[in-house]
Image 1 (cartoon, rainbow, N blue to C red):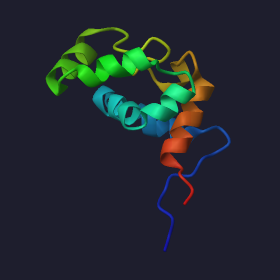
Image 2: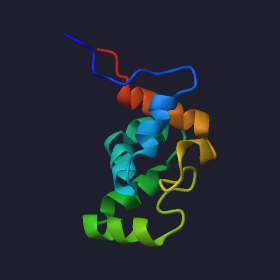
Image 3: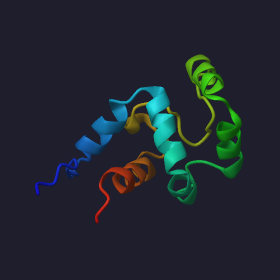
Image 4: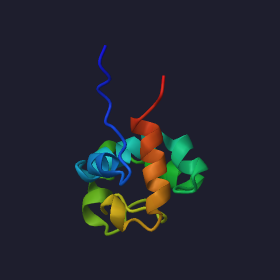
Length: 102
């Protein structure tokens, strides 16, 4: 069976394009679905995760559409991966999410 996962290049372009190609709510979903990973890397705090979890889907949409830097302080779901304060940590987290080795 052929492996259909994106390949990681030296420049991390595929990983970056996956994040950069998502809408803001898709990015938030990735973080929430893999909260332990993003927390372990210091990209989110438990209080931020608790707050995001407590919001209804419509409230999340409202916050994400209205705020410049919604929900998280160490990462910005509205910025491209190269513009993140913790770009290397973000790439590491996304590699773990998208390039899982079975």
